Image (tube, rainbow, N blue to C red; front, side, top):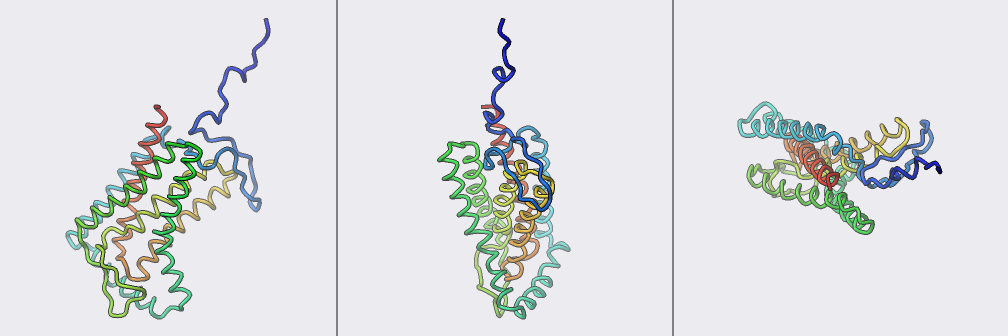
Length: 257
């Protein structure tokens, strides 16, 4: 009787679309190593859906608290105008380089995100990564619809200044669509890449970079006078809840199929 190798009885690890491949340990100072396909969903939310549920609950509770504060003119809303006035004064007295850097945050939170979504969609179509394509389409399109409905429902006017730093926007202010989009996009990119990068140091670097970009987008909206602090915080909260819902549901459905 001929012995049968164990390898013939098990599927290759990469046959699973949500498998996180093994990584090669690395040391700080060395470039991170990525094994396997870096742009496939790791499936962590599918295996632990309670994480996604927790994100949804926390995001909805935070957004609800801010929305109630807006309706009742709570302490957070009362701090909006003084903070905006202070930032506006600082922006007017800042150097052109700083102002341009803050203005660029608007593009990082909108046009760049649209471009990233389009490139990812084309990439996933080419490789027939349908769950990941569904995540991009549903998350990107859904957050746009979500912002449009909520912004028109609350109808909060934008901050108005006699001397604008950049321009005067007329669309409703609450919540911040740029902040919402930043969490949905850059948070998801970190979710895709972090489990596949070797070494805790580089994982921390990538997570920190994603957080910094998200914070940069939100702060830039305050600095140029397009939003209040409560708008940005509400956008962040909505982004956390929406991301947790979309990515968890799609991963779970893909795993079952």
